[in-house]
Image (cartoon, rainbow, N blue to C red; front, side, top):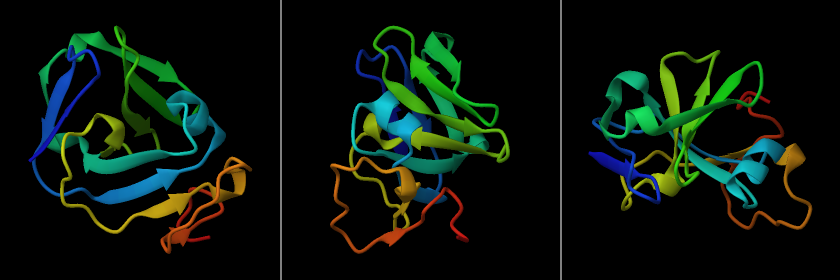
Length: 134
């Protein structure tokens, strides 16, 4: 069971079942929206997600023609990303997840646009774009 909540606690959600994908995104949007060198996401099927409270507090920002980003309207916490080309998945921001749920090995995406002042110091796979086939 995965439990998550925003900073103010208005939004809480849970998910049953395994994390499908685990990534550290270095794209400029994720860096700006998270205020960090990268953002970490756990991909879950939308069917796994259950809002315990606060679904009406979700704000949506269409960050591109391909993605919608969800956040708490009160505190601004990033909840996750919905990629329109993957309608069955929701990329839950690990910044709102409680504890340390089981997950597959992670990887770094969009490394070609990573912050120049950040050095990746682990042995995880790195991909220039979001395409893990590159």
